[in-house]
Amino acid sequence: MAPLALLIAVAFSSCEKDFGDINKSWDNKVYEASIPALYNSLAASLVEPGGTGNLLTGFVYQNTQLIAMYAASGYRLDNMSGAYWNNYYAALANYRKLVELIDANEEAANMTNVKNMARVIIAYQTLRTTMMYGDMPYSAAAKAFISSDNFRPVYDAQSDIIKDALAELKTAIDEFSSNSSQVSIGASETIFGGDLAKWTKFANSIRLKYAMALHGKDAATANGIIAETLSKPLLGPADVYGMFPGTITNLEFDRNGWYQGNSYVRMGSTMWDAMSSTTDEDGSGIFDLRCKLFFEPNAFGDWVPYPQAPSSTTPSEIGNSGVNDPYNRDRLTVHSPSDAEYIYSPLNVYYTAERTFPQVFMTGHEVSFIKAELYNRGIGGVAADAATAQEHYESGITESVKLFYALAHGSSIWTVGRPNAAPSNIELSTMMSNPHVEYSSNAGTALSQIYKQHWIALFHQPFEAWNLARRTGYATPSVALASTSPGLNFYRVTYPQSEIDGNYDNWRAVTGGSDAPTVKPWFMP
View 1 (cartoon, helix red, strand yellow):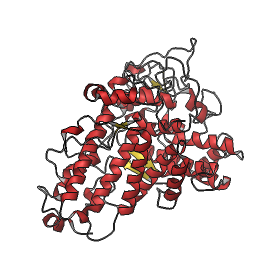
View 2: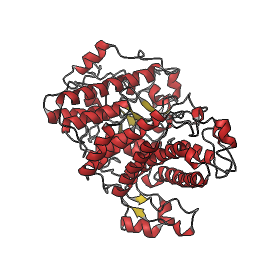
View 3: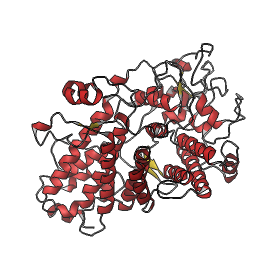
View 4: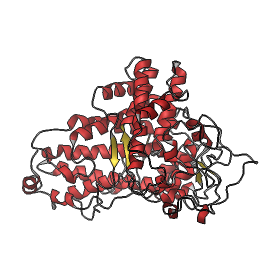
């Protein structure tokens, strides 16, 4: 690839700034429209926006039943619906301007890879955002810098948005070039370090994942996309792609606030039933090696889940303050306060307090579970094959367990119950042979197992678990929730108030004037 220093003088002679600016902080803020600054802003948009923790714990986690809450958080959905929306549209505007600048540059042909890395980022963001909200402004959105006619963009149908984003990913994959004339961002490209092989695998794997969401409504189109993705590079079973603190200066992810304050989070009975073969409070029935990494016993050393659907006789939790707050960072020093009395098993304090765990975009074990589903169902251009489905199912479980072991072992704050760097072969074999995990010879039962293990593996990616649950019609583990649960029939995030204030006519055209989280988006069965 062309060296960066040469291209500063040649390729970017028509820009006010050159690609030397790419070496600025990864969260470089855009004060002047330039290619490097706009690209860096796109990269920064991949970080979860602030103020979203209670949307996850109060609504998404509850709906997926990955965890439970012993009391309502008190947070309103309409107060939390704008963060992802605003983050996306800022990114989309930056993307459109970036493309405009590249296309106008006399050396645009040498920036094909830069343009397509940006294309992958915005396609990924588009898919994530439409899965949250449903129909949304897209084809006419983020163009106000072009004309005032674009101030109030119309909404596109979710079906069209998904198909277009998947097509954009295909374009990027097809156009990535190893030609030496291409601009080399190298290590200054903070997502994959300019590694085109990783960009290709990421784009193709994302395309596979979201084609599965398309399949339930347009099987013919989805099958063609799935078959094509299977013929191209995908994430390997052990691959983990995302944002990693330690590789980006000053980057950390503080999730502790998600579980403190009014987020009354505990291990739920649905997850407990998926990880333990008995209700014994001594934990003797636990067979899933991830259980003690995600959760821990209550203040009395007992494993007690909070019921996903509590009854009037369910004992009340003691409280969520002082020593009775199991997520208080003081527990990193005094792990078991002598006067603590919380009676339900919380999430593991080290898991909630560790700030170096990555924000995951996609993992290879997700790909494994998708492949297991494909071969179990015989869709996407592959014939049903129980043996191949089992192979991918077991690979998905193995790599998921290994990932969480590696994260916990690598934590500098994890002391009590810190695991080895990886599970032993005996531990994995014992888990795999447990009747609750061992792959069934019955295809229907096996499919339920695939969904369950895929769901567990997405514990660190709650939005993806929500997508899986919704696209499968809640074939993931679940029970009937109480009528008061904030997760009940939570199918989408409502549009933010800014849409009502600034784009009312188009908002009303798509909502009929009534915007509710109980309205199923198009992709859902």
